[in-house]
Image (tube, rainbow, N blue to C red):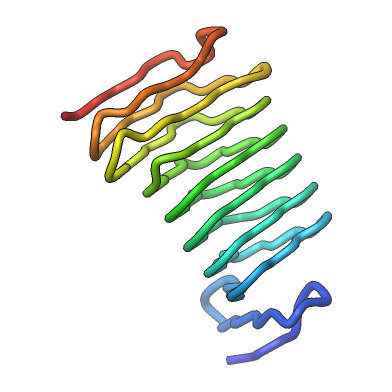
Length: 151
């Protein structure tokens, strides 16, 4: 196993022969014009601008701008995304989500209270699925093809 400093921050990158690297960081993390081929895992607050991420896990708040996430996105807190593309499924355990000019196939929201998903700009989202409490989608331009409330 190798431990490497990455991205000019005090990040730790853990890589093994059979698995892509996992970048783990706690606290306030700013990524600018970075490509992370493995999993990016943050406990705290993440701000990402002009990045390409393979897989994203955030325990806290995430603000993404002009970012592409190739695999799954898991956010346990608040998510705000602008000019961002989610290729894999987005899983959110939280109550507040803001999308502006976002493309996503599937967004799954599990909120403890009534979750709110606000969509603006020219966003295109195939499915928003509320798996916990029934949620509300604030979408004035009808940019979501399907909304599923399980309760």
